[in-house]
Length: 516
Image 1 (spheres, rainbow, N blue to C red):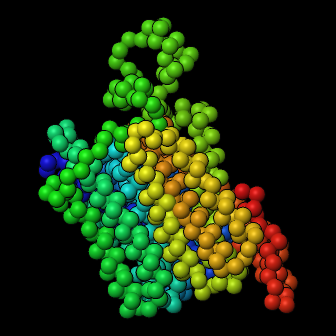
Image 2 (tube, rainbow, N blue to C red):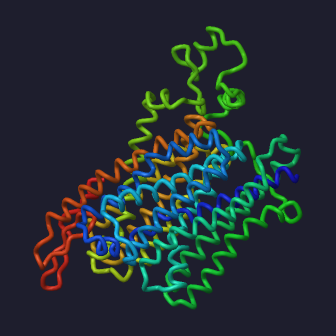
Image 3 (cartoon, rainbow, N blue to C red):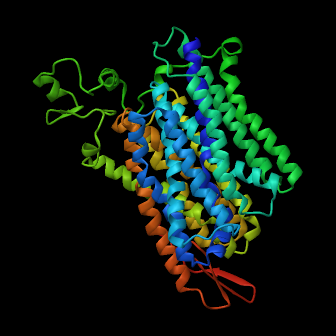
């Protein structure tokens, strides 16, 4: 049992990393201050956020590094990149040093790289420690990155609610401190080399249920209390409770053997993208490092088995090299679907500060960031639902992903139809839920479609659509924004909506997201 308990400690370490590494969540909080300090246009500010997203295009480097270096070393590099990337920007805003615009872009790129490297470390660790339940482990771990915005908002309010520049300093220092704490756990507890002990599946099931309950409690706590934490004293009290909830998962697995007696079909948490008839074949295939089957195949096998086509095995989860991956049609369909869902949501969140300001709700930026963060957390947590459903209710995880894109479209239609505070709040919540589900489920889908051993590299290839989509969408928004500036009676929102304010009326006549 000691060997098995180690993986839970490391899972908690990834939860801590994810909870404090989502530093891109709070960009709307300091984007206006950054724009003012640099004296740049809206289009140039958009390029700063795009540069941060461009860091994801280099995320595949972290996957390669993990093939040759230990996870703790890659984690340290990620923390160092964040310290430099955000720290120098904070010094710029406080006029301690002067930086050219191009260098600010490079710092944003470096900061974006740090986030991607943090994520990749967590992905690889979860897949390595929980091969049979990687979807559950990934969903739990990545879900906590959704609360980063709310946590940073609490920390900032605990120090100075009126200093939005403080977010940059927190982005630089807090992940480094968290990484140091996580490293102590990761170095001490190495991956279990021994086979699972009899009865450990029983405790795995109970642990996942308990950790999910703790995660839900954490999200509800932050969602409800973050809105009343504008006062320093209240914020400090709420922050203390949040830290307690984050530490709680560390002791939860230790209590399971003595207090919990739960059982459900552990095998149902595995390969849910295929039916029962194909499952045994996949499990045998996945046990081979080269990705091929042990037994000989005759012509009848090829003719009668739907898993084979043109004498080539087409098995979900087969390990694909980068060269083979980019030749697959299903990968590019997956790529476009992600760009039209998760990437658009990221662009929206990056521009949330300007959107709320243009609609006249500048004072609500902090609460909107917290709302988006909390809803993104619950969206990520919802991606675990398929793993808890009975076998007869299983649906392809890709089908769940397609369903998760619907709320985003509803949200943008709502923004087009109304510019009220209620519409903005509701749309932000819907986009947060939708994007959170997509971000979390995508990691599991990548591992299950294209192989778990290559997931660290393959998923980073997938998310290269984020900087591409961010560049296209943000550029369109900025061009519309800049084109309509000039009339004193107009206010133009960052998402491309042109809002006329005359005789107390506001009318949104154009929104670049309406076609989505």
